[in-house]
Amino acid sequence: MIARIPQSSSKPTSALLFLVLLIGVSVVAQTQQKPEQLAQQSSESWLALVDAGKYADSWQEASQLFKNAVTKEQWQSAVGAARTPLGKMLSRKLKSAKYTTTLPGAPDGEYVVIQFDSSFEHKQSAVETITPMLDKDGKWRVSGYFIK
Image (cartoon, rainbow, N blue to C red; front, side, top):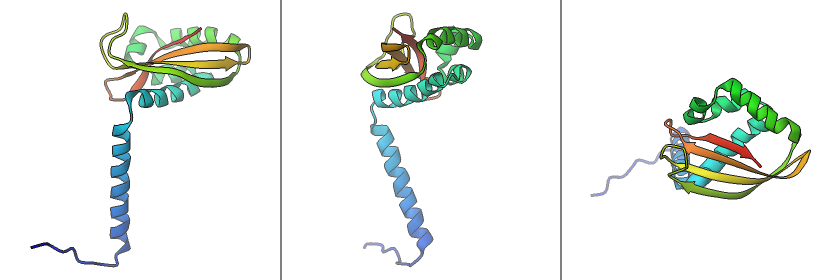
């Protein structure tokens, strides 16, 4: 015997069903994204803070490992000294993204080492290396940043 759901012209029910399906599709899409993609999205948001000179905010959004290694004041001083002479960010293009569970000098965990070919107002060609990690809160957060 097959149970039959009564048909009704109730729009709230069909809207609710649509919303539930939409949420389900969104969750499935997120779980199918590779760590490299999720880490890159997080890194680009974090880099936008640095590009805007919001160094304190970038420290706040960094991983716990990052915050344990450098104080907010130390970070603001160091990143300001490195970025200010470069001038305005002109372009940034993904060069590589590599997932790893080990890095020299860092505890085992989930990391993605990302490199961007970047161009600044006063430095046409630079390579930015940013290393997000899967933090204890389940979010990808930056654990390291270097410009060469």
